[in-house]
Amino acid sequence: MTFTKPTSEVETQIESFCLEPEHEPSSEVETQIESFCLAQEHLLHGVGVTVVFPCLNEELAVGLCVEKALEAMRLAGLDGSVLVVDNGSTDNSANVAIEAGAQVILQREPGYGAALRSGIEAAQSEFLIMADADGTYELDAIPRLLLPLLNGEADMVLGQRLSDATSETMPWLHRYVGTPAITYLVKKATNNKIAIRDSQSGFRAFRREQILDLKLSSTGMEFASEMLIRSSWANLRIQEVETKYAERIGESKLSTFSDGLRHLRQILLLSPETAASIPGVLATAFAVLLWVLAAQSTRGFGQVGSLSWVADVVAGVLSILGPLVICTGVVLRYRAESLGLRNDHVKMPLANLIRRFFVYGVMFVFISIVGLVALLISFHHHPAFISESVAASLSSFVISTLVVGIVLTATPLIAPFLTTSPRLQLLVAEEEPQKSTLIFGGDLEKSYGPTDLSLVCLQQTVLREA
Image: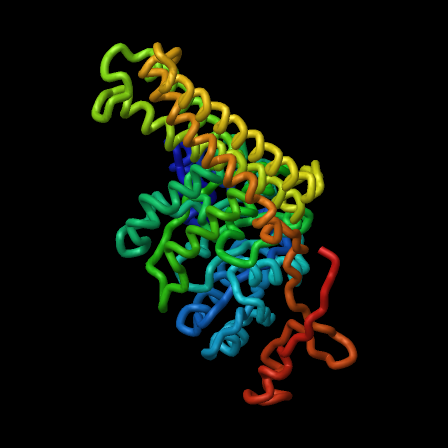
């Protein structure tokens, strides 16, 4: 049984010794190593762990995953069980999982996050492992993921896949573009409080109660990013352990671009400063700097093709994008606070936010009109009191200010899109009196028969307090 990737000669000796349980110590060093291994095994012995697998049409792999997880926990001395969350499979995944030794619950609300949220809430053990039921993750590494938790070194441990990923196991777009980009945004959203390489790893170990306290709300693939960001906000310690990554069994359910956009939307809601407010301020400041430089130009005087003309054009574009991106950040922050996705309380009612945007818009329109009048007077005044280079920069400013002002004055039209909605409630089942419980096993299949088995899993919509 291995624990961490060896980083020194001593750790290499420890791993080699631990991989050979029949090895007899022949030196003082090996005696110390044996004591270390026994201490780790004692730490794991009897610990209650549940492995949660979200499952959507994984008939070919789910049985193998369940068996591997149970065997890995048995060999490590863990008091382990496996919970498979059937997310609306149309194949025989549920029966295969039951036959392999898992408990199965049904969550009809579609989505990776919805399945995992149901599994985390339904599990009973203190420690949970989440993994995919597609055969990609190194389930033998379950003890290695748990040890930092048990040693008090971490509150969440991720199985880092990128070091072992290949073109056969992970598409190059995910490996070199998607995962690094989302990881960068997640780290920025947490003010770089977490040091990880693989934010999209679905192989994680954590304490159940700590994750329930985060009140996670995502139902799709963005659940992985939300879990990390909220964990960082809660000051949970996050570590990574290098693990192997295999080629998936069966057809992939990932949608590269739609799932990526869901991650981006979730990160923006949780941390609008990351990709909205700060870039907007920088763009606006750069636009002002370009205007100042162009206004002092001694060549071209804003004529088409001159450097001052280029500066005015670039400044005009940035001065439109900048304020609008800043306003987008404010809207996203308000939306996140209203939905309870941030720790902050709502700082202003929606009506006040819209009114403030409208007032700013009217102010910008008025400023643009004043600038336009000044340009007209200067043009018809002899001699002109505004130089050509300054007039060129001022005209760019007038156009940009007018566009931004018109957009902001129209914000009452988008007010309906800012209305709040509660955290999505997942479907749950009533245990009494219909006995339509979420959890079922092999004995139920014998009692009800294959045809009636799905009826046992039918759920009623019960709204619960988040």
